[in-house]
Figure 1 (cartoon, rainbow, N blue to C red):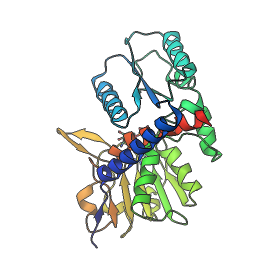
Figure 2 (figure 1 turned 90 degrees about the vertical axis):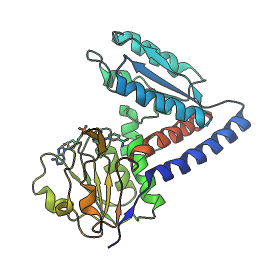
Figure 3 (figure 1 turned 90 degrees about the horizontal axis):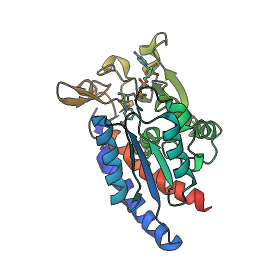
Length: 283
Ligand code: NAD
């Protein structure tokens, strides 16, 4: 079987172009520009790179870059004051607090200050509830990116056996819910699942977000299944995923590489969420 490699960069580029066009139309018709406020607390080098990439992508899409950098010793109430100010500012469509926050800050309490209409990471308790109820709201970016990749490759979700490996609030859990709303038969595998290989081998679509490099190989995958690898790890100076990519060539029908698979989709979906947030606030 020839395995089709899913090119996440190409799909992400398509989304970025689509969002940039829609942002230009929004700006033209409303006289206001969607704005993304990123909040970085401290000087963690990896977080600085992630935030820089998000800001650049926003600017390239015509979204106003409204960045706030706070010192690493900022107090909880200081961070909350900044979030509240941005929440009340009509120029700010979306608010993103870069995680992880320095030790001593209560990330959940800070995130929950973001109004759901501006929650472009989809991580507040309210956004989680709106997702659970399948109501209008903003969905977490990486799970949305997985769905966009599957749709772009015309991989049917309705009725499909989907197995999601991992149940984090950021990826696994919201992804399982999104798939359920798309009428898949969804099973979540996690660290305490019994006979997890048997469960994974049932999947027509296997999405892996366990955060363990090389966890998944040919023995976990039904022949002809689609495999989406969310994991990202730096191993020996190279990026790799949770899936042993080479083992699945000729075995999976579709497969995402790392890098160049799910990774580029996350920022593209952040841009889409920022535009949606601006639209929700105008409605
Ligand atoms: P996490 O550590 O919060 O969650 C991992 C989940 O995997 C947990 O629910 C745990 O129960 C489960 N798990 C652990 N060991 C397992 C096992 N042996 N079998 C089955 N399940 C197991 O991680 P996360 O935030 O969900 O991220 C997962 C991976 O995805 C990481 O490598 C992370 O870097 C990557 N990630 C990538 C992007 C992206 O943009 N591509 C975004 C977010 C996360």
